[in-house]
Image 1 (tube, rainbow, N blue to C red):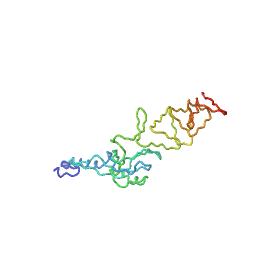
Image 2 (spheres, rainbow, N blue to C red; image 1 turned 60 degrees about the vertical axis):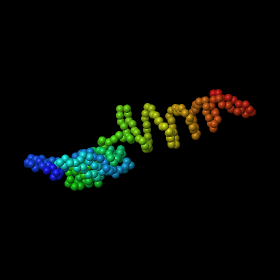
Image 3 (cartoon, one colour; image 1 turned 180 degrees about the vertical axis):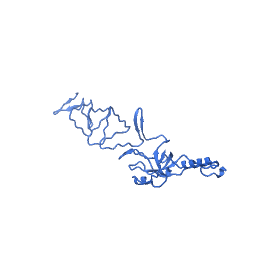
Image 4 (cartoon, helix red, strand yellow; image 1 turned 45 degrees about the vertical axis):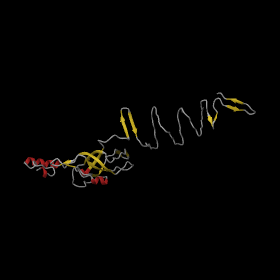
Length: 246
């Protein structure tokens, strides 16, 4: 009578006391939610600076009735999600709609703690229920276009957008450092100090320059379009000129 099957029960479930007890035990066990793969259907946060938010998740492993007919799950709303955070220090990487991740289900109702963010009694008597899910992302996702990559050759930070570093003090310690900018490099600061030799292989345009020591130049030094380097001449009072060849 497979056409009349409902739920988990099949025709053999009541054929003996053992089968009946097995069906009863299985029915109770099947009510226990532990962990499963889910898809993110909604997110309260969008990557901005804010407190940790919530996600709506859809369990991806279907339920089956006694005849093996698939019964998809419904969406579970407002599940807290995991963020790597200690005190006020955090890595902000909010989930995105379509992400696949892991959902864990608490053994008791967490709704009161989720609402107050403090110690509280269970919100109800439910146990191991999917309504008390926690989202840990993500697995089975595609290739990222923005990432921090760790491998044997070092650490790479890649972004198709701007990368910003904001701090009251930034210290970089390295044996060598190279900046490769295909368009330009702009530094805005009241004082730019170089402790060591400064070398350029191209044109240097200075609005003003003050030196407290020697300034060595090549053969051509132009000021307002006039060469004052080696080989230029000086007009003398009363006529004539001298040639600077130093």
